[in-house]
Length: 475
Ligand code: MG
Image (cartoon, rainbow, N blue to C red; front, top):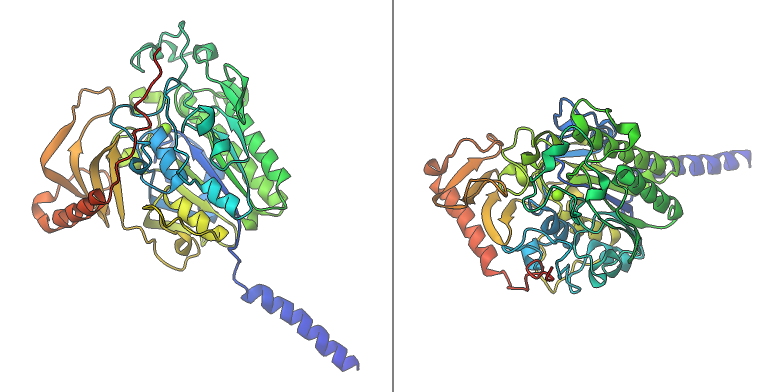
């Protein structure tokens, strides 16, 4: 009898052990947290080479998880980039990319159309609790707000933090006007009458931007605590480090990279608080956290803009610096740690999140996202082999594998470098030349032809939709 009990105990004990060892981590219905920075460049984190901005929490995320080095935002400016992330489609498909206006403004009439399906709506189908905290920028009229696009709650500034300029603000007209009057002093908060909203109500105006990064983090942590026992989806989109820069007292002078560095270090601190909270609640192993940025650094703002590191150019442009951004995936016990050189995009988060939550991908429309789960688990390569680079509603460049062709080139918004359609496209091998310096078009006409064919297929499948950014109210 004693032997039998011992045998049973042994089976139970070793059974349990073998179960916990042999069982692969279960990627079913994890919590999903997407942290999105605004205008943070490829070179702005210490793990991506910044010599003067310290980001220990994001670096920890990268070393414990995956650091992607060929990860792209869907566009090079805010509104279309956000539409691409949330819908898993190039923003041209939803009417959220335009040649008339770069982004939505406080007097814009449009927004993300109701027929678009967002990640949040996908997650609701799977029974998730959903929250959006931060910068929306997909339409501030009630019918376009996050609460109409699958989010149970919203807390944030509905567009960019440099909008709603008051009459006293010297920064009228061109966005560089008057900005440098404040190069050495904080720009007065009251110069930007931006609203802070909770769900559909304005609760503070102007929003106190000095504390906004901290408050976004606090709001996110509150949501995580309240939903610790159910699957949740949190989309935290910081308004910063987009200009004008604001930082809480605690982080003033914190970095070696001026006010810009201070702002990034405060965001990093918040990321650390979120990771700590997930660990403390013992749900880190059921949570995928993604960190990325909506576009490259706004270089014309010099020390108030970030760095694209080794990449060429920045925000607004279709060179690598405009759209290649940090991409970090953290999910202790499930994400296979490492550096990933495969191509990925923020558009893939829709498909990846849907896959993890067990939700079907819509089959009534063209989707551009792919499922990155095999790469996250260390079981396969990224299905993405291509990336298209739009400026507004016009395709400027295209990447296939290591090669990128430029058909149209243009300088930053507001610069003297006019739009030029090239007779012979430029061609770069990004594996050897990520800075896009050495044109090899004359040596590889066959590669240019292959990319051209891919572009033609894409263009043939485009459906014309209403331009959501074009219409403005008279003012
Ligand atoms: Mg941006």
